[in-house]
Image 1: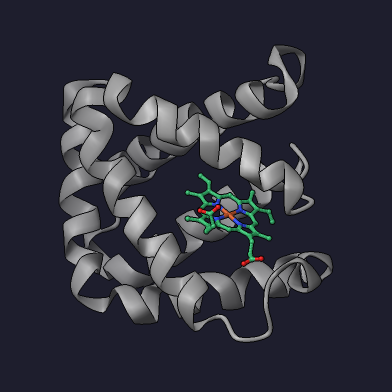
Image 2 (image 1 turned 120 degrees about the horizontal axis):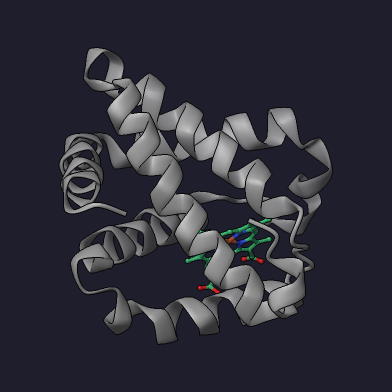
Length: 141
Ligand code: HEM
């Protein structure tokens, strides 16, 4: 990721922060619409899950300026996800729902540069998480 892309991701995330509860609800709504099979992996009551997701995204987004500092936590998170039943192929589905949510949440502020920056950020994070949890051979991207 270029420094400009890190800036774009951090600035656009700051814009959705005030509506993070709605953004998280939008995200899971979209995820369960495009991938209904994953619904049963999550608890019935998604209140806590929504908060955890947004809090973790905030840590990762802030950590983009000092990636080494967040990698141990990302590795541990990825390994916990194996026990939730998450497979490597779920990561692009989640990435798609995340980008869709940001596009909806940001409206006119969502540009092709913002999209490219988020694609790079999610690709870097998910590629790292997949290789940590399942081994490098699985991390195709
Ligand atoms: C960058 C990607 C992701 C981030 C930042 C993320 C974040 C989180 C966080 C913070 C938790 C709370 C529990 C914990 O910390 O261990 C969690 C739980 C969970 N995540 Fe993710 N996640 C990601 C990718 C995925 C993917 C690809 C799936 C696949 C569907 C998924 C499914 C789940 C499930 C099923 C739980 C457990 C819910 C429960 O039993 O309480 N996550 N995730």
